Length: 187
Image 1: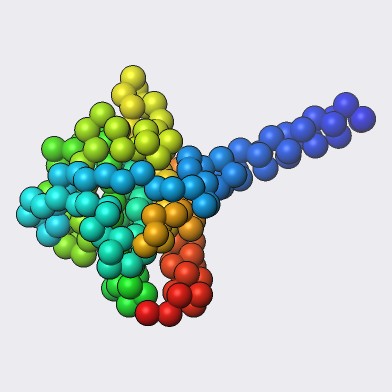
Image 2: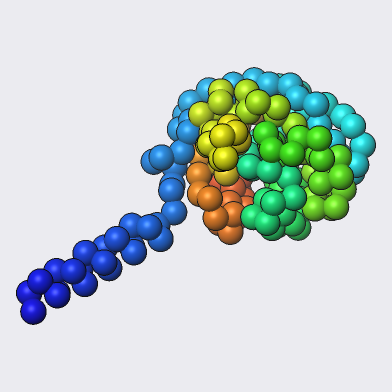
């Protein structure tokens, strides 16, 4: 009986551990770290463009989210959710940018269909920028960007860092961080 209870306890603890999201304690760069500057080829509304973090920060905070691959199931859901929230982020003075190392040749189409023409998506071939943010993962022998969201203040400091394979909480947590910043720094 004691052995059976111990196994149940162990099984419950294991399930709990497996169900917990990876939070900022395990996220790449931490709150207060300096965000590495970058410039990448990108797409907005299906058209080629470029994205410069330095230029975007001149307008206000930046919501930078890394995602594994364009047109994968979780990344599509996350893009839809960020698209729905983009206007609310803009009202707070924040710019949204998605960055991926996967399916980089499809970002123009992804920006149009899945991001619904709302925000810029940048290609990070070889996950070089993701590596600077310590936000990479290995998948089938390829290095991809891990699902990590950041909010970066105009001074380049990271205000928020969150890593979780599940895309569900990224948007709300980023919005909460942007609102907190805006309350402390009215426009």
